[in-house]
Image (cartoon, rainbow, N blue to C red; front, top):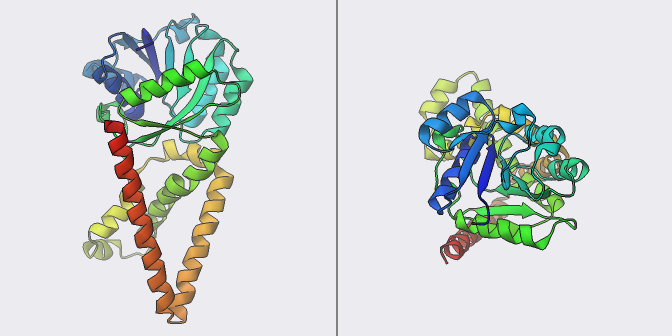
Length: 296
């Protein structure tokens, strides 16, 4: 690998899994971590990191070639704004934030030109959090989005693409704008639908009785409801307009379903099911293609 030392800011599920995947891929350099004391303690105990990164607290220059920002979005932005002068010239800075425009704007505004920033977002994760749930195979078969822009240099972008493949994922290059519009529909909307459904059950006043009658379908639909606001608050606030647009599209679709039911228009509902069946098959086909291309 092209890096001798890596620092992970936020050694939780994503940051810890990144470190473990690096080791699995053969990285034998130094991995340091910085962030919350609880996560750092767990990461040290599990051997996820070699040591705690001390440079940012001491005001010194961080000697790492690669800095991986895996904390909540507003913390990523705060790190860029606060510690941009403590990064080694020539270092590559990338992140794992679930929205990209605000982060990329901050990077271009605050980072010196000697630091290469490339936005990133691994489409992998879990409703579970923390270094205790970190796994070397978290990224296996996953799409890993990167968002270089007109200021990005080809060599660091190529280095990051190679690294992502070594982690077991598949790099996909899009603009930050396109990324945020897309994930609002395929990631953020499903989270809010799951959250709203689970909350609606509790608001009915007969939750225990309803849940006794629930099956696998309800469990699948509400799995994401276990997700933590401490992560999702930043995601929603930094992608608000795109999420609102996605919600409006979803409401429009539900209104069509409601109208079909009101008018006993079962042919329209049949067509909706057929369209959804095709979409699910296409989704599985894309997933299979991603997994096979990653193996190659």
